[in-house]
Amino acid sequence: MSLEGKNALVTGGSRGIGRAICVRLASMGAHVFINYVSNSAAAEETRKMIVDAGGKAEIIGFDVADAAACQDAIKQMIKDNKSLDILVNNAGITRDGLMARMSEDAWDAVIDTNLKGSFICSKAAARSMMKSRWGRIVNISSVVAFSGNAGQVNYSAAKAGMQGMTKSMAREFASRNITVNSVAPGYIETDMTKDLSDDIKEKLMTEIPLASLGRPEDVAGAVAYLIGADGAYVTGQTIHVNGGMYM
Ligand SMILES: NC(=O)c1ccc[n+]([C@@H]2O[C@H](COP(=O)([O-])OP(=O)(O)OC[C@H]3O[C@@H](n4cnc5c(N)ncnc54)[C@H](OP(=O)(O)O)[C@@H]3O)[C@@H](O)[C@H]2O)c1
Image 1 (cartoon, rainbow, N blue to C red):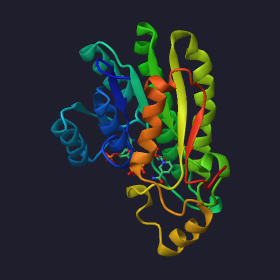
Image 2 (cartoon, protein in one colour; image 1 turned 120 degrees about the vertical axis):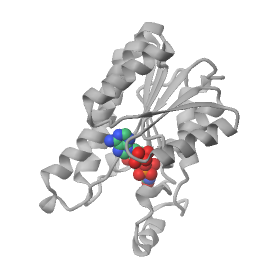
Image 3 (tube, rainbow, N blue to C red; image 1 turned 180 degrees about the horizontal axis):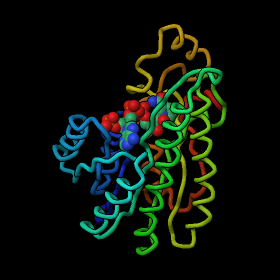
Image 4 (cartoon, rainbow, N blue to C red; image 1 turned 60 degrees about the horizontal axis):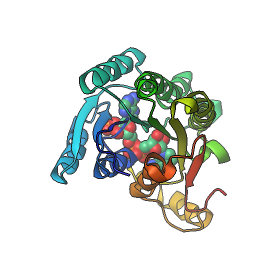
């Protein structure tokens, strides 16, 4: 299906998985809005990649953890472009540490960005989608929402929260032809995983049947399926993209 005429917002679209999703959606014809919080150079690089390939893209900077900023930016974006049809809640951070030593700040930062940010963006976007009676929302979750992970109590709680939110939103919005799904990546090669030690990477290879880290494009492919025509009858589901590490 062509996404010609559709406006797509990808939070955290400047780098990593978000960038691959922006590039993929633009290649399907969507007008892509690349969100970032601090790395404007990376956002510009993503925009240039899309435009150089003949696609349509704009940059829209805001902090998803800042509810007012998020609501204002999305409201303005809808006003300027008539609709917001596709939302990918991809922005995410980690503040890892064992629970016994985890600060409340580390807990709040991860919940506010990964979980509350997705709620705020979805609520703002859904107004436009309900009006046009068409919409696609994809939440980027994680394998650790299902498996848990020592050192990631905050992150796995946020991602498990996104899973519950995905199903409830799918039920609430289905009558307006808005599908809501999640994609749960395993370990993907991005800035988020670049500092994993060789020891950890070696151990991971024993836990991943396909014996390699995933690429951002692997995740973008699953997102494209859910947003494109082939995924139209799929809602409230999760696609696991993890090389088999969780089944
Ligand atoms: N990589 C993995 O192995 C993996 C596995 C499972 C799930 N995931 C999930 O996939 C998503 C993308 O991960 P990634 O590996 O691509 O991460 P990444 O390379 O660290 O990039 C993070 C992106 O999120 C943006 N961002 C962070 N905080 C934000 C905020 N408060 N407001 C707006 N944007 C914000 C960053 O913007 P700036 O460029 O401005 O900093 C950047 O574009 C995350 O939700 C992550 O939890 C990743």
